[in-house]
Image (spheres, rainbow, N blue to C red):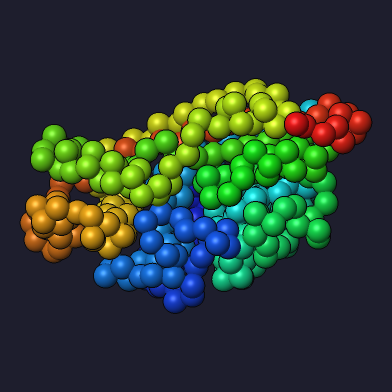
Amino acid sequence: MPPAHQLASLDIMTSTHGSDHRHHGRHSHGTQDHGAHDHDGTDIGDLLELDAAVTGTYLDEAISLIRTETTRPIEVIVDAGAGTGVGTRALAAAFGDAEIVAIDGSPEMTARIDAAGPGTVRTVTADLDDGWPASVGAADVVWASASLHHVTDPAAFLRTTRSHLRPGGVLAVIEMPHQPRFLQTETPHTDLNDRIEELMRAKGANSFPDWTDTITAAGFEMRTRHTVRIDVPEPTELTRAYAQAWLSRVRTGLADDLTDTDAATLDELLGDGPTSLRHRPDVAVRAARTIWIATGPASTTEANQEIS
């Protein structure tokens, strides 16, 4: 079985998708609407797949942590806020006998999962803000990767999730603690990264708290909180494409907020000159994911208890 991160759909290198990709219904992921394409032709679905191909070792670590903490057979896994299905495919590969239920608010996203997913995957188009979908029953594992921060009331969602976990079930929450960085060399671009991070935080893009207290307040027992550091030091076709796609999206999404100098620097990086991402020898990827693993109720009676 290949590592989970090798399951990304790499046909994105040669194709784009014109659908309106609005992840989790009403919520926007990142700095702009999912339906928008950047000048290099990359949409949010393609960017998510590139991200998984380059940084997706965290998927293998999260799955390993789930195996460590589970005390029951894993028959049903719910991927809450599945996006393009990166996590869905990784879970299906790791737990081949389990049904994987992929929930997302975008019909285009669930159609994309249907097209790429194995037969053990079932998709449900539903907004997580509307509660637990009626067509989704109890689960042994609930996986929420880069989705919990999109939910309007995360505490309520986690309480509902707990009530739908079978005894001994596991919750896995994954978030990106900071934006990826793409250059090894200490240059003026280092300060640019910091300014971009500040602007994105100010706009609420991909910002989230430490979920530990929220998870435990919902009645879960916290088992581990682990941050995976991802360091790809050498430029490859994939890392260059990922850097190009990410910063192109930043350039478009923050167009009204960047200083003229920072906008010009990004244009230089996104161009085709010798100092661009396409040609620089110091292109690298430094990224991270934080993983929370928690266990649900020990019994059906406990599962039905109301958490205030």
